[in-house]
Image (cartoon, rainbow, N blue to C red; front, side, top):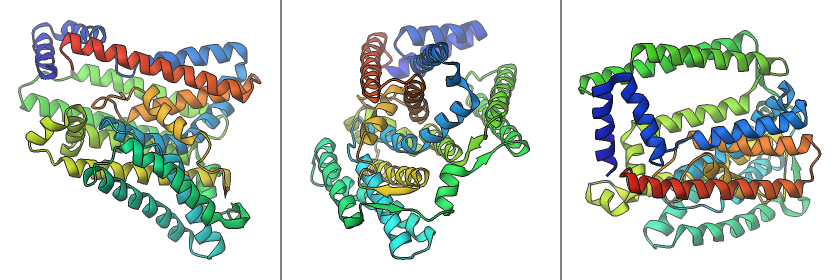
Length: 409
């Protein structure tokens, strides 16, 4: 049904040109294919409301903080996006992130190992957890909800055991991880060069897409449209770079997060592996009969999810400059899952994008920052976050029914 709808869109673009492309967009929105529109509208509303309550919300200082502290949980949410695309769940990402951070801290601080060894050990722990989860799911047939719930409790116990009686381990002053995650920023000429590189890569990718589609005798984006979007991207990123530079600039941690999102987006949209992930999430049996190595897809996704959780935990430890018994065990799980869902990833599998993690975590971090600025109690933050999550799931459910009715799956 989705293929038939896509073919109808293709014919409409061919017959009516630019007007047809606008009609395609409208038909998709009316048919429940909302994409990132709800979360973008929600972010605009959030910014408008908090700015009206306190203009400090949109200050450069506040914006830098929102982006910086969104990165660790955002990386964890990126892994959640992958597992949700398969229609599965991982409830233990917070505990895995805390365990990886604790192992890194013990190796570096107590055992005197180089920082690189500690970081690699933490990431390796995440990968091993993913392999174990894949075995439990693909070989033993245990539901992901069950073994990840067990992991949530078990890895929290490992965290407490590794930290021992100390309870808290402070990272060394001036350590590379702390400097990278908390104190390193890009501004000035280097930041504008980065913007130019991003715009150039965008133009190159769109030109490559045009070439491929024309070679396949399909409708392709116009060069004028690509040029206008490139100008808009350059203007938007240029202004944001200037505004963030009024304070400290782009944080290294957010740039790492953004790079991971872009790479994962390209992997999901442009590689065979990515197409197979969507196929398995949409209909596992149909994917298997089409020749997709379903087991390999599950193994790769579970490993990536846990590895990204470990990486997010290491980055969070660098920002906090310490690892404690509470690391990764508070609301990290729910925040990461909420970010993925609020960003537009479907709980029903087969629909979402890497950018959902970025949009969703920015929304949640903006809510937290805004409530802190206006002096609202933290209890309200949980209630607001829960309400936003419920609204996102409701929109996803309604859009799913609309897609089914319109033939878009």
